[in-house]
Length: 512
Ligand code: BG6
Picture 1 (cartoon, rainbow, N blue to C red):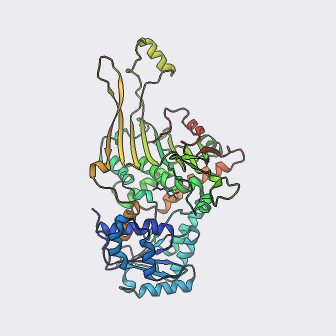
Picture 2 (picture 1 turned 45 degrees about the vertical axis):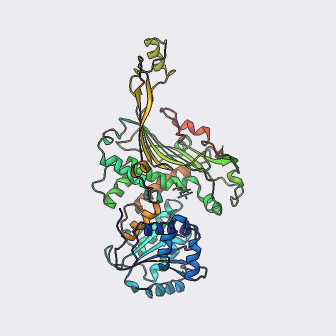
């Protein structure tokens, strides 16, 4: 059970980009979810800020239309605490007006303020400067009752250099403890459980290393294509920047990190950043061998014909942007050296699923499943040659979505006279066990930001290390002799050529 948000006598949550998609689809429903769960104190007011003029009442109505029906009651209970203020927050005069507006609300400027930048990334620095210059971000320390915090949405920069500039700009006005860089994957219950699974249980950790693990596979597969109205933004970023640089590298870091000393935000983040820094930075020839970039062509998803990426509305002609990436990543440290981390993300794949597979090594000698009529010596010889592969490795699957599940596969002897092993699995499913759905990621993250817990947010150095790796891969793709982007039909598993990334190790891409 979460705590109620009561960190200060009153709190203002100020959302810049109040009319945007994220606010309507995620933030307000998340707040209504907090309200429904009894986690949102009545002293929290929500102030939407964007340029168009509208009244509080109009804004409340507008938001009401996108509230899921099951949250409607909760929304109705909180809607009187939602306000709207029209301002262009890149214009100093209008920021001054906003300040006066906020100061005139109950509690004056003695309240705690959470500024949520749900804006286009190019506006982040401008808005921060404007707020900083109006003295709106100053606070004595993290525990002050009139705290000031800023949440920034992804993408955090377009590359390492721009991310550094943005960090520098933030640090001109804010201490690191005031900055909450969001990666919504960290708010997912099953992602948080990775640390619980690894460090609360003792059975996994002794095996969690290069001696026992053959490979790790992380998949973020989506069946949706580029969403309406998003093509311009997406095309400038592509799959690598949109999902791999942030969500997938965070999943990798959680799987690969050492045990933190405590669960304090900085202890966990120190451990994650060590892994991100250990990612082998590939040169152009590594990138050519260890990555595949692709784009979906027309195909069929869930029985419906869909168009290819290049024909999507808003995609610029001649686009070379990838909608799919597959990578073989090396983590150069003592625990993981030699263990491939296979990462794959794509849009318009056959189905949506996110999962992590930890594949353990196969037994050194195969004793079981000799085919009927084959002599023991033939069996041994064929296994050695590799012409008969009977071993099935144990695999621990952390299913993040749509099902929230853990499964461990193993072999059991089939009843009967022969020593024939059949694959079986142990499963744990969140829904079945807890009989309740996990709270959406944004609900958890908003609560933490309001309460001042930065554990599930990214620190500047994590972002920096993620970009270091990402930039190298992207640079490799731009090299003169880099392999060209390939195509895969929408609704497929991605391009076949990505199978080649498994060369030299036992395994294949999960079909979910
Ligand atoms: C976002 C990306 O960060 O994550 C989207 O910008 C992507 O392109 C989304 O669709 C995936 O999130 P989830 O929670 O649906 O897996």
